[in-house]
Image (cartoon, rainbow, N blue to C red; front, top):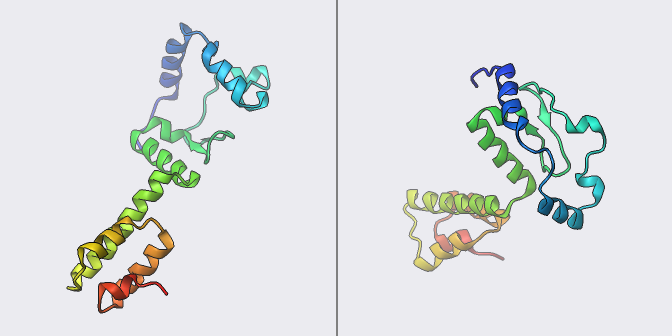
Length: 156
């Protein structure tokens, strides 16, 4: 990660926020007030409303985050992407789980293809439609040794 001048970053933040209102949007405040307990979103002390520099190695921890957010992730685009993915995985995001299942299904099909094992259209669709990671893991282990696609996907 490239080095960042924290004084320059703080100066830029101060420029941006010097003219911006620090009052929350009334609509957002109303929604937050209706959907969250007050202690979940309101400042607990005057200190929490002030800016303070954070070291690149620090982490932001908040009850609304499924995982701590590394400050470095805010300074580096790739690190930001990785932090978001990590938080989504920690949260059990359904889209991440769906993509992981799709990768596992493709791996099964690639193993069967590499072993010259024929897979019917119905078997292929059954493998690709499966989202159960335990089942997909079991099928992948079987695909390494099985003599047919049916043997891979058969369930007792």
